[in-house]
Length: 418
Image (cartoon, rainbow, N blue to C red; front, side, top):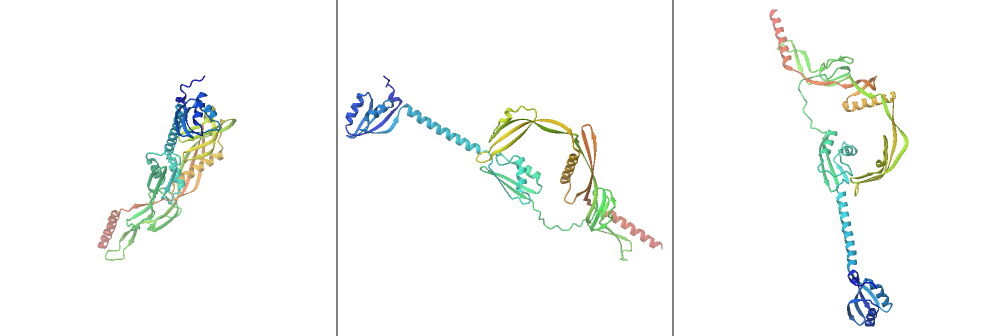
């Protein structure tokens, strides 16, 4: 016979019993060994009692279709533990949800840029991305590195403001204005002299007198457009000697100037050839957590990695999921193709021109000489650059005035001798 000592402690049900002859039903339960407790009579056709969980099936069978049974409650250790488990699950779920919300708040979900005019948004985003600010990146305590990168890359940015609004980062750009107040004309007497040596292609004086002509070779420092005009006075009160008039010389002095560049390039080029062996994998990155199964199993001495992203999202949490493939390759060396070498040098020259020449300069011609040595090819480049070589040089007026006075004194002495 089964033990009923802990039946009510483990589990019991509160039952509402409806029907006639309730006293006889209770007696029948007692005869069948069904223990009831806390029997309460509400009226002749309704009562309530507590029955242990072990006896509930026998109790329901004894009632049959003669009585209506309604479970109004449960008690005991088993329901308590079941309730506690559901509460723990709810608490754990709330904790996980809170942790998820907090974790995804650590990342930048959106970047909004305002105030730019001459700079494209793509250029700004590229520079900020290299400095560590992009959608899906971790939020930073300060963005001084991003500001410094923008100031360094774009000379026309006058001010950068970066602040956070939740998970959104707002970037405000202020560009320096090209509209400047009209400045009074500079009357400082100057000559236009050559900033570097070259052959004059075109000389166009706007103010002053040109001292060179097209085709002349000039050295650095030679006067191209003079701001000093020598003239003979017609005012007989001053004498008929020679005097000087000074002006702020200006104009254009286009010349072909030489530039020499040298590039060193490896003679042999390394070529990767696939062996046919590969390892497929799955790449998953959620926030800072990253898994790349292909890298776990890859033991190739040399390899190439390819990936295709299937999911790339930043909201509500930065998530990247894709498939990867690591291909084994062998590295072989071969002699560099001279045609490809010429293209590389031409690209390097164009890059040099973009970084060092202004809008008023251009490459007129260039010549490349190659010299081979052990493992290295040397490319000597001679550029012929068409540029404005004129620069201002202030005229020392006092020296000219002394010469003028000396000339006038000599003339006066001659007249007296006569």
